[in-house]
Amino acid sequence: MSAPGTTVADRATAGFRQRYRTEPAGRWAAPGRVNLIGEHTDYNDGFVLPFALPLRTVVAAAPDPDGRWTVWSELDDEPVEFGAAEADEPGGVDGWAAYVAGVVWALRAAGHDVPGARLAVASDVPVGSGLSSSAAIESAVLAALVDLGGLDLPARAWPRLAQRAENDYVGAPTGIMDQSAVIRGREGHALFLDCRTEEVEQIPFDLDAAGLAVLVIDSRAPHRHADGEYAARRRSCEQGAAALGVAALRDVDVAELDAALARLDDDETRRRVRHVVTENQRVLDTVALLRAGRVRDTGPLLTASHASMRDDFEITVPEIDTAVEAALSAGAYGARMTGGGFGGCVLALVDADAADPVAAAVTEAYAKRGFTAPGTLTVRPAGGVTRLA
Ligand code: ADP
Ligand code: MG
Image (tube, rainbow, N blue to C red; front, top):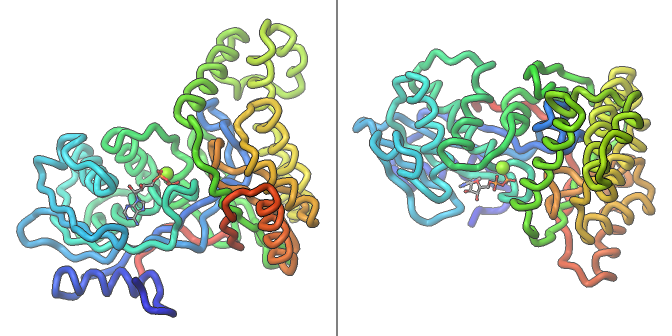
C-alpha cells in the first residue's frame, strides 16, 4: 500500500527499486480516457470524441542486460518474466502481463529490435471500469520500449500498434479510439476521431475557462452479458447497413434517416440504425458547438445520446439510468452513459462548483435504490502519453 501523498510516479519508482535493487532509466506515463460522445459509432465507420484523463498509469523501466522482459505491477505480488519465444506467440503470456507482452509482440511483428527491459507499473486509472486502463498500460509500456531501444516509430503509428497488442495478442476486440485518445490526447482538448479515415482533430474543450467540470460516475454495476450483447449490436448494425445498401451506417445521412428507416422491415434493426445515425450527428453537432466555444450548450446533446442508448440501442442498466436521472435532477447540463454499456461509467457536465452536490445527489439516489455506492471523480481533459522528467 502507498503512503499518503505519494504520487503514482513515486509508486512506480519505489516498486522498481524494491523489485530490481537498482534505479530506473526513466518513467513513462499514459492517461486513461473517457468518451465525451459517440457510442457504438466506431465500428460503423463513424465519429467519436474522447479526451484523456488526469489519471495516469506510470511505468518505470530500465534495459535488461539478458534481453528478456520482467514486469511487476502493484496490482499483483508476483512479477512476470518472459523471453522472445513467449512474446512471439499470442497466448505465450496470459493474465494482465499479456498487455505488456502484447506490446513487445506487436513491435517485433512490425520488425523492430525491441530491447529487453525491466518494468514496474503503478496506476491511478481504475482497472476494468471503462476508463481504459488497458490502453494506458499498453501506451506507457510502448513509450518506454521505444525510448529505451531508440526505435524508429513515428507517433502517428503508435495507436495502431497498441491496438494490435490488445486485439491480436491479448485477444480483446477493441477499436482504435482508446489508444488514440491515450496517445494523442491534449490538455484542454477533446480528440475528434473519424474512425473510417483515422483522421484526428484537436477540438478545444476548456472546462476551466467555461467554469465547468465533467463529473465521471463509476456505476459499479456488475457487467451483464456485455460480450454477447456487444456482438448482437454489431450484427444488427451490419444487417442494417446491408439492407440499406451502404458500406457502413456512417453512410446514412441523418437528413435521409426517415426514408432509410422506412425501408427496414423489423423494428429492432430500425431502432439500432436510428441510434447510430443520430449519434454520429450528435458528435458532429458537439464538435461544432465546442469549436464555437459553447461548451455548456453541448449538455442537451449528451442527454439525447443517453436517451438513444437507453431506448433505441438498449444498452443501459438501472444503475446507469439512475445516475443520469439523478445528475440531471441535481442540475447537470447534460449526462450520459459513456462506454460500451451494460455497466461502466456515466459522465455529467456540471458547473465546477456543482460537481460535489451532483455527486452527492447521485450517491443518495443509489442508496434509495439499494445499489452499491458509485465512485465519483471530477476530471478535465489532460495530455497524452509522455516521458516524465
Ligand atoms: P479498462 O480498459 O476499461 O480498464 P479492460 O478490461 O479493457 O478494462 O482492461 C483491464 C485489464 O488491463 C486488467 O484486467 C489488467 O489485465 C490490465 N491492466 C490495466 N492496468 C493495469 C495495471 N496497472 N497493472 C496490471 N494490469 C493492468
Ligand atoms: Mg480497455
